[in-house]
Image (cartoon, rainbow over the protein chains, first blue to last red):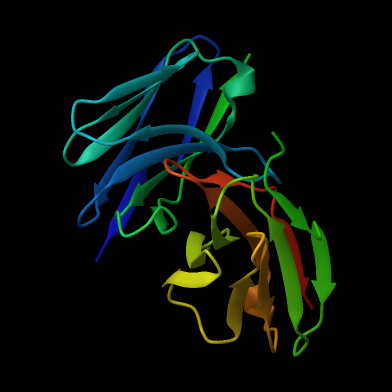
Length: 111
Length: 110
């Protein structure tokens, strides 16, 4: 069964304290690994798409990496405004439309 | 470029009623997907439409249905509402890479 698992479920950091979020997947025929940020009461905001092992993408304080079995979202020197739930999803390549989501990691950054 | 819009944003219904939610994708996007988000199950795929045809369907009962119009706008319908249908319903549109989500419709079933 296709599955995406994220850890930890929740993470509390002090401002400036770097860390990583993990996303492990078992999606047959994976054709893309997606990262989203979701603020309370809002829809997920697209961050990155990774397609092949070894690929890395960066945006401000965030860097996403991909291996054959998992992806990491590294957060460098986070700020309070980085507090959100970060979602990981796998696309099976059948189409762009069917994403399998993990349950998310709720990140809190304290000043 | 305007993002994905969903209407209404909030909805309160009672058990047994039916509801229709609407989604307007980003201009030029032909694929529209619908997801249900609940605290317990997270985001779960409902169905995807492309050029007015259902291309994929998730594991939901037949009470959940949808359609897409020639202008790519999409609607989803839930009939005979149950308490467990209370959730945030999200619509996403995509062109080639990645999906872009709307703000969602918060449905509460009493």
